[in-house]
Amino acid sequence: MKFDEIEFFNTAEIRDGVLYRFPLSVCDKLSIGEYDKNGQFIRDFNGHRESARTSYGIELRFETAAKNITLLIETARPTYVTAYNGDFQNTSLTTGQGRNEIKLSYPEILEGVGKESENRFGKNVWRIALDGEGDVRFLGLLTERGEKVSVPQSSDCPEIKLLAYGSSITQGCGALCPQLNYLNTAAQILGIDIQNKAIAGGCFCERETVEYLCRETFDAVYLEPGTNIANRPLAIIEERVGTLIDTFCERFADKKIFIMTPVRGLSDVSKTTEDYTEYYSRSRGVIVSHAQRYANAILLDGHKLLDKAYYLSGDILHPSGFGHVMMGTNFAKMLKPYMEQIKREK
Figure 1 (spheres, rainbow, N blue to C red):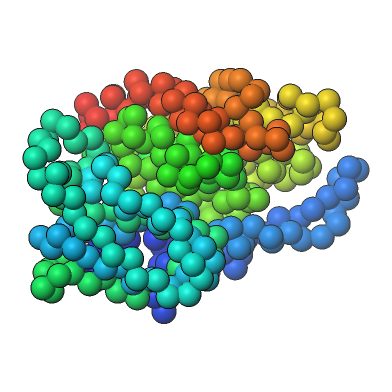
Figure 2: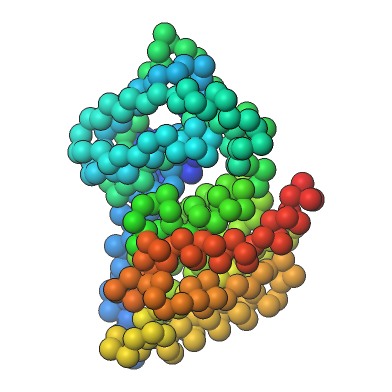
């Protein structure tokens, strides 16, 4: 989304200055049934609506001749702010609740850095990542002497954008710093952009979510849909996950659709947790059976993504900080030949 000559990356809409990853009309429709072990309906669950409203993965991107800028934001909860000039990290901090004035300066030493040292973004592109669990309200951007701000030129940005949808694992839960989750790590290695639409506690493939994601602009898609839905009845998994895969593969037959089977965790590793063997087998079976129908579907193994059990946190579900970085390395290896092919064909 472009607003005030700034690109609000991974932002679906701005309401009264508040930045949202998903349209609120989609957030309000997020829901799935909860069932007992006999498959009997208990109640509707919509606890993932709050996760969909978080700002994880949102970035402000712009170029300006100003060497000093001030970002004005209001945060409902502490929010991680990481500023970059290109891919060079400028600073990182955590906001307090309320109004925040964040003063940033372009490092003079970057003037002498050549283009050969750049990676995904040109060094003149300001990127300010806002990763938080509460509302983030954009109040304004001030530049010294009122210098103009403009949306980054395409030549200063990655050629390839990967749209990602998944669970808390893919959103980045467990990472010591949101910017070092496995998707961000892989993006740096591969030199691509990743638009992270994962939903912690969610990824239940609601029809409204699928339709919204299909309206986004992307070069390839990554889906990690088999974790949170795994303990639902097979018919629900088939309806939700099967439709997600079918929709993307059929509507975008000219694009690669990467689909991850359930990531190693829980009873794959621990004998003292609820037995997810059958659950994961069900969701894995649906993923595999649908992916195998399409030539553009690339099936990825979640046990190879997290290939060592000690990459997990103590909950034996989410990756640790180190685990995220190692998963990012593994993910980049999985995608590298396909990304190279996509670049050649663009």
